[in-house]
Every structure is written in C-alpha cells, then in structure tokens.
Length: 378
Ligand SMILES: *Cc1c(COP(=O)(O)O)cnc(C)c1O
Image 1 (cartoon, protein in one colour):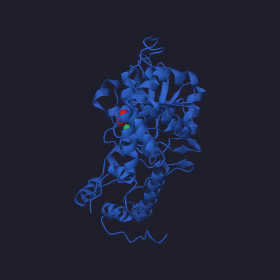
Image 2 (cartoon, rainbow, N blue to C red):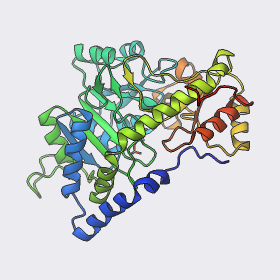
Image 3 (tube, rainbow, N blue to C red):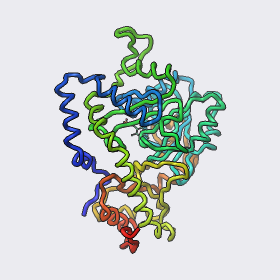
C-alpha cells in the first residue's frame, strides 16, 4: 500500500465529467478574463463565507497583498502576525514596504496567541494578519477585541480555512478583510492558482475590485496603482463545479480526523505524541492533520518513509528566524512555543477519499505497531 500526503486527482476522478464540461464551456466561449463564471463564483462564495462582498483574485498571496494595499499599509507601518505560517503571510507585509512584527502561538492550536499579539502592538501597528492555520480559526473573539479597541484592522489569512467557523462565524467574515487561496492543496483547490478576498465593507470592496485590475476605473483611468490580480475565468468555472461538493469533502476530512483520534489516542495517552483537536465552538475543516511528536519525530518519519506514506513538516523554520528577515533582529527564543512546534510538528494524510484501511495503515506506521482499536465498531 502507498498513501500520498495529498492526491489531487481523486476529486477529478469523482466529478471529472463536470469539471471538464465547465472548463470546455469556457474554452469555447472565448471569454477568458472576468467573465460570468468569476461573477457567479463571487456570489456563491460570498454566501458560503457569510460576507457581503467576495472578489476573485489571482492567488492567496495576491489576496494578502491586495488587502494590505487596500488598507493603505506601507512604509512606516508595522503589521503584527504569527511567526508560524506559510511565508506568504509575512512576504506580503514586506512587499508593501511595511515591517512584520512576529508573535508567538498557543501550543496545541498552532494559532496566534492573543496575549502575544497584544504585547507586539506598538503605536506604529497599522494592521494585524491573523492566520487560521491547518483549517481551524484562531481565537477571533479575543483578537478582534484587542484590535477593535485600538482601531486596528484585522486581515484574516483564511487560505487553509474555507468554511471553518469560530462560534458560528465563518472564516473570512470576522475581520476587516478575508483572504483565501485556491492552490490545489487547499480544501477548495483550482487546477492552478487562484484566490479570493472577502469583506463586509462596501468602500473597501470597491477599492479591492479596482486594485485587481490596475486600479482602473473607468477603463484607462487610474486613481490608484493596482496590478493584474485577476482570477482566470477557467479556474472560476472549475471552482464552481467543485463548490457543491466542498461540504461533503469537509465532512470526510472531519471523519478522517475522528478516525485518527480513535486510532492514535492510546499513543497520546502513552505520551508518545500529541493529537490536534478542534477547540470548543470551532468548526475545524482539517486542511492538515498535524501531530506534535516531542521526541523521536525522525523515527516516525523513517517509518512513514519505509511504508510509502506521504508526510510534511509545516513549517520547519519560523518566520522570525528566516534569513530574509534577519535585519528585523529576530532571535531563537523570541517565540518559544512556535519554535518548539516547528521542531515537533508532523502532518500526515487527511485528504477526502482516503479509505479506512489507509487511515489504519498510516496510524500503524505512526505508532510503530498494529493498532488494536476497532474503528468499524462505532
Ligand atoms: C497557501 C497559503 C497562502 C498563499 O496562497 P497561494 O494561493 O499559494 O498564493 C497564504 N497563506 C497561507 C496560510 C497559506 O496556506
């Protein structure tokens, strides 16, 4: 048996005919840029995310960049964010000329620690980027309250968290702007790059729409400088074909997580590893299933390799320790929880379409013996 970390062809195997028909329709239409599929996707996703405005864009990275541009963040500004995320979160801050200030995470949740956020705020703080990592929302009640009382806008990096909820509110609807990615490994993945920005603020939505197309309004007249941040029509059509299945795929991810929990709980009780869990009041959409293994992570990796099982370490080096940010003065020990997590985290396959025997095969390889738990009984 072989189990990849992710198999993006599974979705295509199940609904391939619909996806191909949607793509062919666009190819034949001749409308390749900002056509009806982009508009239809924006309407569908604004409803899905519970926001007034959704704007299809070129990638999750560009969504973050545009969010900062639309909020007028630039040189002289600081933006506080988590040190434990994909690089794009921090890269966007530098690219607008602002300074990233990195804060630690809450152990176990992988998400920004509200106390660390509060401590990192200075008079120069112009925005906060909160990341909903691995498919679970950060503590948005506290983060929102900390930012709101100081009048600081919150950008949600919801690239890994489409459909996730925090106390009934959806990812991308709680902050000032939400940013999503349709990179193929995300829960709603395109056949290439794509992204989305969401907001409830009408004026901000208008600005984001202009920024997407070189700031142009009307055509060839530019009151602001934007870029080419457009979502391809063919990707929008493919995403629309997949969107109807997203909730089914999410519940499969949730069932896979529940199966792992049953199979791996004895290993957790024995102190071998720590399992990821959904916080109470949180709808976790499980973009990743990430264990923390305090000692001997490498031994588990060796067993997974020997068994032909895919794995990943997200993220091996915290953002405050990246070479490109050395001038910011980040040091080992600044964010101890995130640093410990990067040394102990290990993500295993969770994608929808995994069979129960594959889940058991992965769990057995993680613990190094055959699990005696009966997952078919309950
Ligand atoms: C994937 C991802 C991004 C970037 O999205 P792209 O579409 O790949 O540009 C940003 N932030 C996080 C947390 C991500 O996981």
